Length: 228
Image 1 (cartoon, rainbow, N blue to C red):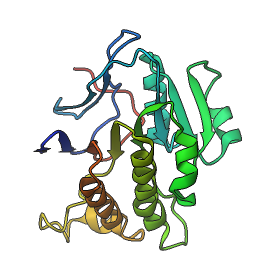
Image 2 (tube, rainbow, N blue to C red; image 1 turned 180 degrees about the vertical axis):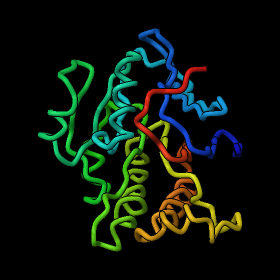
Image 3 (cartoon, rainbow, N blue to C red; image 1 turned 60 degrees about the horizontal axis):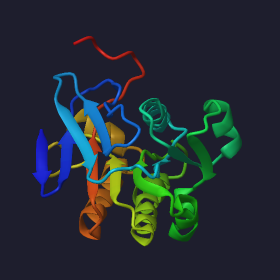
């Protein structure tokens, strides 16, 4: 299911495998990020304007399972990347040394002002791949997936970031779709109503005026992509 909202795209997928995003091979190019589902549907994020100045793509949540793959694919396609992480030493053990990769401290729960410093003026776009870690704190999803996303949006607005990409989740709008009793919706919301928190974050982004794209993947796996 795809919904087109002006210049923004929202696409929901069934169970998907994380498949290599497609990017132009040129060193000077516009931003293009692709996610494919198992039916070979495609959602593209494109930013008009050349990146000859080699401004960076900021990835928030870069050491998470999804964020790590995003960083790897961006680097493979010739982008300069700024990886926003909570633990720099941990990130150094995850990512090999790369002149096109900069690792910076960026905790989305510490407020937008500190994120403004981390993003700085050398970032062209931001990909939000953050997600709360399961804990006994029932407010964790709201601290990360809602307020953390808001902090990122506000930091991007202050920095004039041209594109904000949110990796959300399928079923965030399950209630409106009559899926309140869907086992997946019930299971995911057991953890502090995380889908509700993500939906509220999406709504905030839509009203913010920022140029955005929302991706709603299904269950992401680390398996190799399916042959097509």
